[in-house]
Image 1 (cartoon, rainbow, N blue to C red):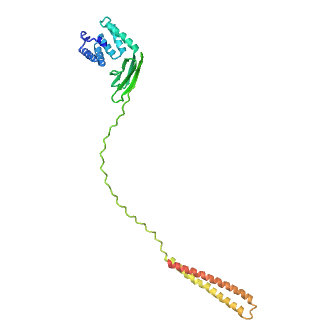
Image 2: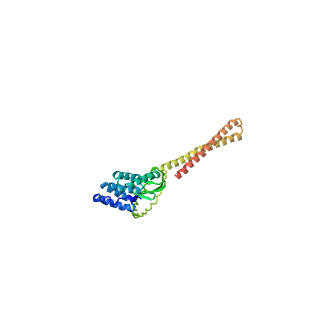
Image 3: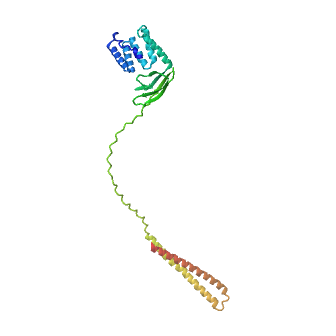
Length: 300
């Protein structure tokens, strides 16, 4: 049993200073309650203040109980070199043989964690020293790594006989929770402004038609009057031609002795009739134009 080699009063006779004695006392108390990590830390501090080989023996015992076989081996060998004839030397030699046998049958695991964790639990044991170094029998062991502000890392570590392996763990930080900003105070409702009704659109006045010019009306009436007067001439000519034709016609057909002149007179009759017709037509057209002019002047 590793505890059988514990040197309880190794510093009492050596006369170290008070601080080294206090660390050694704390280490032995932690060792007896199986807090081997705390015991190892206190033994190491006592060793730094008072490097007595007997304290080294106690450090070897603490490392052995933590399954740190290679570290325990180094301390046992150093103890034998300085105290080869010590009463516990035979027990230390047997310890070295057991450690060598276990290291051949077991396997070593080194666990490194980034960033430095708060705790590492391996094979049911909680470690507080980094990196974690432990010799374990072949098999699978649960590994749990914790650090505040990071996700918990868990996995199974497989240990092979006589092998040494390293497990590297990179912790992932938890997602940052955004700070909740205070809600702004609600703004007072804006006053409702009722827009004034738009004035009714006044329709634009229709463009005034230009007043007829009095001069234009007078000219139009004058033109109509002249047209009516001018129509009298063609009508009179037509009437005269018609009368001449009628006279000639009566002479030719009713006056005896006019056979010799019948042919020329007949030609004259036709000419007179044509002239009468033309005069009549011109007179009618002129009268119509004159009446149109007069009516238009009255409408202006």
